[in-house]
Length: 406
Image 1 (cartoon, rainbow, N blue to C red):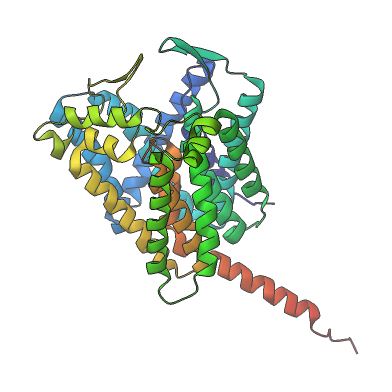
Image 2 (image 1 turned 90 degrees about the horizontal axis):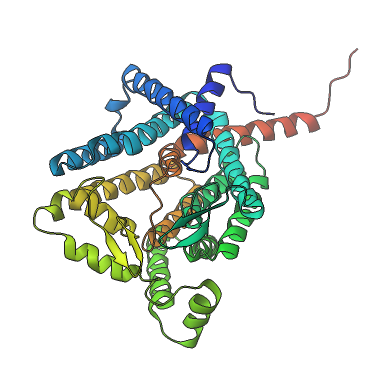
C-alpha cells in the first residue's frame, strides 16, 4: 500500500483533474469544476516555480523557453493571445511544475501514482467505447462517436505515455507490478484496433520491435546500433505508408481504412507548406491562426503532422526549441546509466518520433508528465537500486542463523 502524505495527495488530485482532457460532452457542472481546479493548479504551480526557484534549473530551461516562445510567437502574429494562455500555458505549465514538485518531494510514490492515473484514463476510454456513454457529435456532415478523450484519434495522445509509465513502474516502481502495463497495453490496442486508429497500432508495433531488438544489442556501441535500428524502422514506416504493393494495401486499406496518402493528410501538408510565407517560416503564424486546410468536406486548422504543426504555429524557432527539449531528455536518460531505463525510453521515443508524422501527440497534458518523468530518470533509477538493496538485505537477514538466548 502506497503511503502518501496529505499535502502530496492534494497535489496529485490537482494533477489528475488538470490532465483530464476537455470534452464538451462532460456535464457543465464538471467542466466548471475542472476549470476552477485548473486555475487553482496554475496558482499553486506559480508559487512553486518562484518559491523553489525552478527557473534556475538548467534541465527545465528548454521547457520554460518553449512556453515563452509559444506566447511570443502568438503576440508577434497578433493571433489568439488569450487562447494560448488559457488552452496551452495554464494547463501545460501547471502539469509540468506540479510533476516537478511531486518528483522532488515524493520520489518513491510519484511513478506509481501517475502510472495508476494514466491506467485509469485508459480504462475510462475503453468504457466509453463499449457503452457509448458520451454519445455522438455531428461535424463535417457526418456523425461520429465521442469518447472520454474526445474523438477517436486522441488515443494517440495517451496510449504511448500510459505504456511508458507502465513499463517504468514495472521495472522501477515502489510497488512493481505488471498490472498497469497489461491494462494499458491491452486496452490501448483494443481501442486502436476496434476504431482503426493506425497511428497507435504503428506506435505499439514500434515499441515492441525496439524493445526486442534492444535486448539483443549488448555491445559498447548500443546507442549507435539503436540509431541504425531507428533508421530501419523509418524505412519500414515509409514502406507501409507509401508502398502500393498488395501487402501495404491489405494492411492499410482493408484492415485500417487508410489510403496510401495517410487518409489525405499529405494533401493537407501541401496546403500548409504553400501557406507558409516569408518571415512566418521563422516565427510561425501563432496560436489560433485563421488558416484552414481543406480535404473534400473536411476543414481544419490543424496540419495533422506534429512537426509541421510546430513550424506552422511557432516557426523553425519553435521546432528548434522542441528538439532542444529532446536533447535534455537524452541527457537525463544517459546520466541514469541504466540499460533498462534506456531501452524503455528509446523504444517509446522512437515510437513517438514516427507517430508524430501522421498525428499530433504532445498537445495534451500527458506529454508534459512524460517529459518531466524522463528528466528525473536518474533519481527514479537510484530509488529502485536502493529498494533492491533493501530487499536483498532482508533476504540475507531472513536466512542468517538466529542467535538463541542463553
